[in-house]
Image (cartoon, rainbow over all chains, first blue to last red; front, top):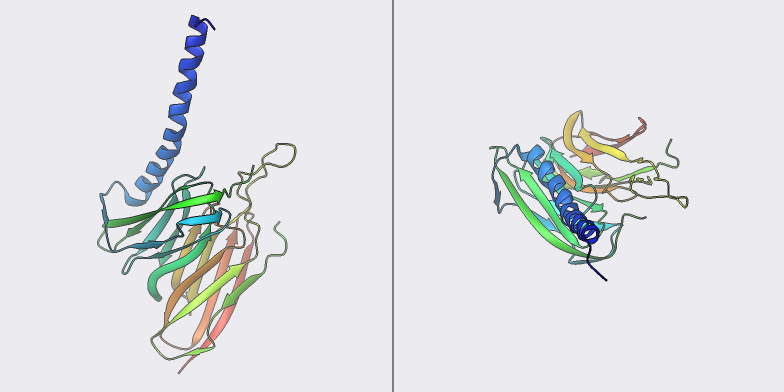
Length: 138
Length: 109
């Protein structure tokens, strides 16, 4: 096949699209983090995220977060079409700043938990979950 | 209008003052994510529970903002310190404006 100018342009556009698509999903993650932290630097330690290494069914993946003393914990699934999963805000009577739930994961990806501490600092933990069957349908 | 929504909550019947107890909640709800398509290729509109709260005698225990990535039949497990006898109130807020509630009593000795 002869490489004409038209082919070259089509190919260039195609590869540009291939590069921007994952970048867009990544941008959504950044936006969610920004909205939660307000741009404050995120540290590590003081937060535990328990998720399975391998999840056979992405429709229901059990996760657990624990961040002693935290005010709120946000969960993000970085590879989902909508990365936000949920935000737990703990009240005065919470026995511990921990919670467990079940989430959907579209495919193999990192799950991230970010906790807001009462002094305004943030800590995060992440865990990669390998998903055999994705949980987003269609 | 979501059908067959039934909250289930497990709270111990009694506790000692200041004890930390575990609460488990489950509510049957399809949690349609808004990502799926039907057989004709039309997107099935989102219909989820977007918020869950638990209070004890009016004081907040936990408040969860929920997104479509929470699984069908949302399940939550968390811990509470109970200072006195009283009532837990659990509330789920549906996208369509419905509010589902459940209450549980606990006796503290």
